[in-house]
Image 1: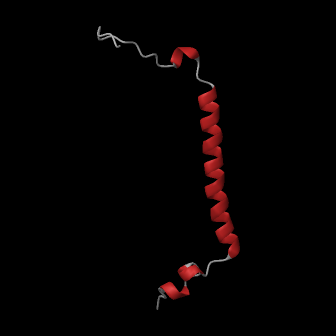
Image 2 (image 1 turned 45 degrees about the vertical axis):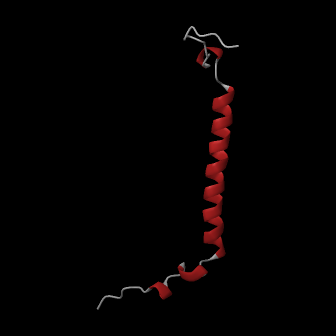
Image 3 (image 1 turned 30 degrees about the vertical axis):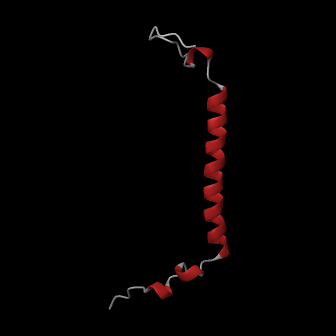
Length: 64
């Protein structure tokens, strides 16, 4: 006979998870956000002048 767990027997059901598991999840989420922010800051600060987009008026219509 095989035992199939019910939702009530799972420790994550209805907020009954352990504190360590909850802290681990928050640690993973916050570290991912921190790494993404650091990567974005480094990438945006390393843009060379040749990579910037310059806007030119190519239509021949002058603005007032």
